[in-house]
Length: 299
Image 1 (tube, helix red, strand yellow):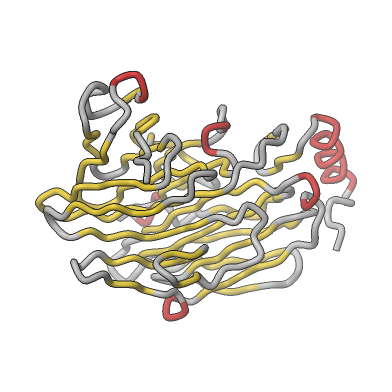
Image 2 (cartoon, rainbow, N blue to C red):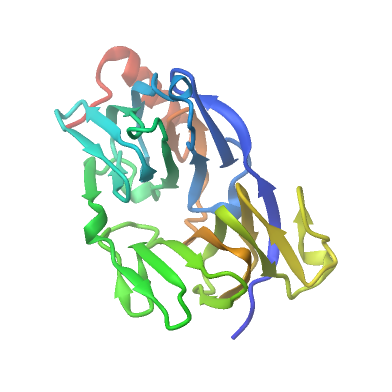
């Protein structure tokens, strides 16, 4: 077994999207090669309804998949194919935009005004850019929850882990999407397939991620000494891992909860503008010309 050292750490940065939704972005709209096949990751946690209720009104997508995981509150959605629905606490929506869809997502919060969720964008390979759009809506009770003897708890949204497989399937990049909780003070080793790019996003508690390869392997943008054997990570910290087949975390006094996400790199060119991601600039121009001409939707 080989430990994955920390390649880079990022503190999620405040930004605004949609019609004025205040959120924190872990990565996106830059060079995302190290995260391939993933393009963007947002944490839309907020306790001020005025900062999220205007939501994400009607907008197009093509060439990607959007993965929305809700922890608190509700998100109402609708699209150009006539689909309507609501995802609530613990639910997941995995939308394959494929050849094109126009949709909206409107966060509503819970009875106390709390809204908490994540959105991840995954790229589609060139062979599936123009595939038919589809949804996989997964309710919380359908997501396997595994508890180890030491109290470590893992929700398996997608992929296989500890012998269980998550409910989302048929995804080109074969991603693994885990929600991991490690009890206070516990050191835990978690397997991650060597060929994948992988990152963790801490959203509760704190801990230390082992950094076995030494000072040359890591660039740190917030906490942790690049020469240390472990990198400290707390709320809204994103940890990008280098190659290896396991991740080691030492939970802090209050425990730690984080997403652990990995996927097979597509290693294809990316032409990206706003909500549309293709392989070439010509394909990108065609997509926006079709939006103007009213021929964007293929099905």
